[in-house]
Length: 238
Image 1: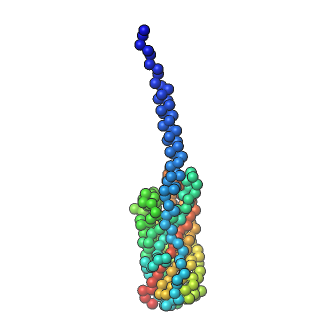
Image 2: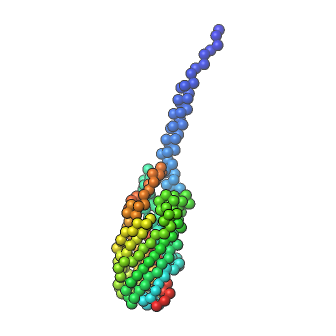
Image 3: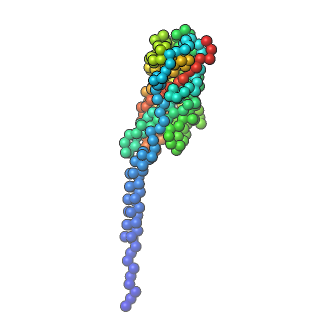
């Protein structure tokens, strides 16, 4: 009797390859969902809170500088956008407390204002996402700062001094990634003791500022979002 002939191994190899492909396809399908559940909604800069505000203890006129402030009205600037994932949309926010600047008020007229934000310190709630935002979206090594400059005077006479907020429309230039765009938006303004608090959620299209998302595998970022601003000011001179 002759030696039995071995059966070809080709079919076995095909089965192995198909099995690997199926596993990879399954992982590719569930990975974005896993990433979505592992990453939180970030850290959002919320609007000012007037719940425990005190009546104003100083007049408006003078030179006011951005201060650290106290929670829940500490100074912060951030963003909120929708992440577009295969599993659906998810809101993501980032924020930084590294904000500086000043405003000048003549009587009850806001005459000038310049605010600078350190973009390299923006954080969400996930270190890997923070690195991607800084390096692949905002290019903070090349554009470490963003800014806002008031371009039109504003009448503040309607802002109450009793611890309740008022609303004013501010017009100015926002600069992000070296690109400048004029905005005109409503700000909440609160006189709280010897502090002045202002906040706003400003709608923006990131592409207006050249913020282009790379082709991530798991997620992309919606074009339209908002800048979240909350600033606490202390008067340094009359």
